[in-house]
View 1 (cartoon, rainbow, N blue to C red):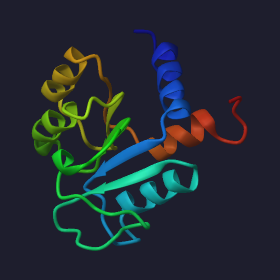
View 2: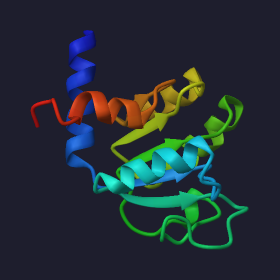
View 3: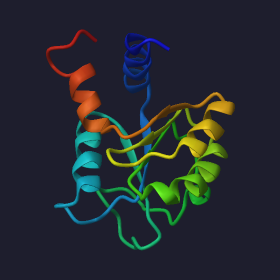
View 4: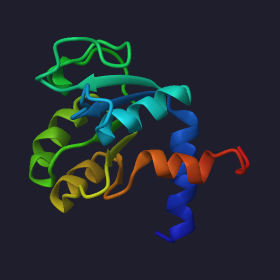
Length: 143
């Protein structure tokens, strides 16, 4: 797939999605997962925190211990976990039938990506969703 084609697909995904489950979201404001989730929330997305150690709301949203506990429609599953944890997360994520699985900077797993692709789910690996949003949908970009 040509580079520009995937960029267009990502741009459309970000424009047309509203709900993002953030796996590994921290309640600590200094953590990247928190900063990225806050940015996404500030740009109109509903964030669903997914982290078994969270007991209280994060960014005003109820946290869930795992993806299988998340009710409703999730369009993007954004993963802030180690690459070796990704296959199990993707397996759970596919039950939600998301449009995309997004693995943050430093996170990738080819086997899990292939599993998601077989289910016609877009996979983005080793890329920050906040940076991609800013580049593709920022103030200077045509929407």
